[in-house]
Every structure is written in structure tokens, then in C-alpha cells.
Length: 151
Image (cartoon, rainbow, N blue to C red; front, top):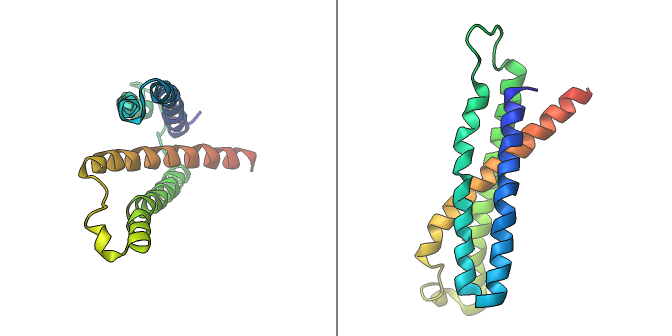
């Protein structure tokens, strides 16, 4: 298996392992204590720091012949990067522009000053973009190698 494919699978497995306790904890805390306390379950997303270790898949053992990535692998990586950034831009439009226009159309342009997104949410939106990019990149890599192996 190619190191890039192992890296993508590693990212998806870590994401699912972190997503399950996050969602379960959120639902339990929501039912027991309400939405304000349930929001603390987002702290489980900090376990995504494990993604840092994904670069270890690209290391060769000393004396091992061959290359880590050839032109085809770099083309797959570039296409996955492009798809990841496109989805992140869609995410930013959804997070930033849709609430702005909903408030503007529902309550008027003057209400935008009063009913904005709280500034404390912006770091979460930024972290969400990071998660969206890596999950999209990983899915694109997995599907690209699947299509390449069937051809």
C-alpha cells in the first residue's frame, strides 16, 4: 500500500475515533445538562492532534530502494489538495456569508450590527476548516487510489 494511501486512511480512522466520543458526549450532556454544558464535548476534537504523526508514513527505512512518491502520486496529491481547498472555501461561504444574509434579510441591514456571530466562535470555525480540509483530502486520496487500482 502506498504511504499516501496509508496516511489518508490513518486520517479517516483518527477522525472517526474522535468523532464518536464527541457526538456521544454531546448528546448525553445535552440531555442531562442542556446546550451550554454540552458544548464542552467539543474538547474531544483536541485529540485530532494525532494527525501530526501522519508524516511518519512517508519515511523510508535506511537502505530501502525506490522513491516514496512518483509523478502519478503527486498528481493524485495535487488533485486532492485542490478538492480540499474548494470544499474549505464552500465551508467558509456557508459559515460566514449565509448567517450574514439570513440576518440581513430577516431583520434588516441595521440588525447585522446587533445580531452577529460571537467572536468566540471564530477559532472553532477555523478549526472546523482544518478538519474539513483533512477529511476531504483523505477521502479524495482513498477514492483516487481505488479508481487507479481498478483501471
